[in-house]
Amino acid sequence: MNSNIGQFTVLRQLRPTIEENLARHRAESVHWRPADVIRAEMYWGSRTSTLTEAAKAALVTNLLVEQNIPLYRRDASLADVGAWPAWLTDWSSERTRHAEAVTEYLVATRSVDPIALGRARAQCMTVGFDSPINGAHLLRSLVQVALDVSVSSVCHRNTADQCHDPVADRLLGRIVADQELHIRFFANLISAALDVAPGPTVTAITEVVMNFQLPGTNLPGFARSALLIERDGIFDLARHLDEVLRPMLAQWRIFERTDLASGARRRDQLADYLDHLDAQAAAAERNNPRIREYGNALRAS
Image (cartoon, rainbow, N blue to C red):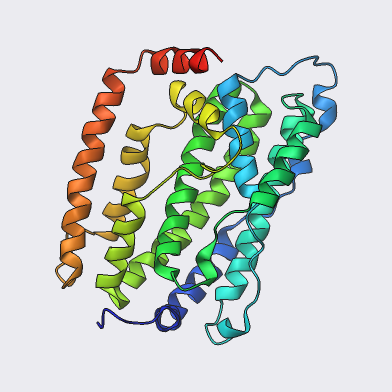
């Protein structure tokens, strides 16, 4: 396969995979509304939130990321790539529903100041997020989204354990079930891309993995939230390796392929980088008495 294969050429060749996975997604997904899970009157007798600070940080960070993704447009240049625009519409709609549900839960449980949360959402919309999935870097965008959604799913699953609230269990369980379908869609698409354009796709995977940052890194207050999330075991480097990267790379059979041509060098770089992350994760676990007392109390505030 020509290493200079164009983005839209790849997308057109993935058309059968997109259509098959969209049909599967629509058959397996469950339509639900926030009101099916959250009713504000459940918490009318509560004076204060029972959520831990780490759980609040994780929920707010995931909310801001999901609330402010763009609703991807139907681009005329995508008219001949079949179900791709329809998938983007469905996916954006479902992520918007997740953000609405988490917002309602945080407000109902008195876990946030709704005015401050509204300001944070407005600020994030002003700053914006880079979302090149319709642009010239399709393969990198597909890999980035697959990893981002997988990280979010792991965070939601572990946050539910911190909330000690059956409503949060149901809500986050419902979101994780949706996200697992999203991860499956994008992971299957990347598997197909590896068959269509193995060299460029493994290059994209390597570039994204080696430059990965947690979703929401540019959000206001992210550094504090990230420390809390890591301190309480919701998400850390070891989880990133064991629950996100390794399962995804195993599904794509990155280290088994013999058709990568010039991409084999990038695959070797990826293997070396994973060894580096493994050493970092081991060191972090050794050095973590509760993340050095929560960043030395956030550098004494």
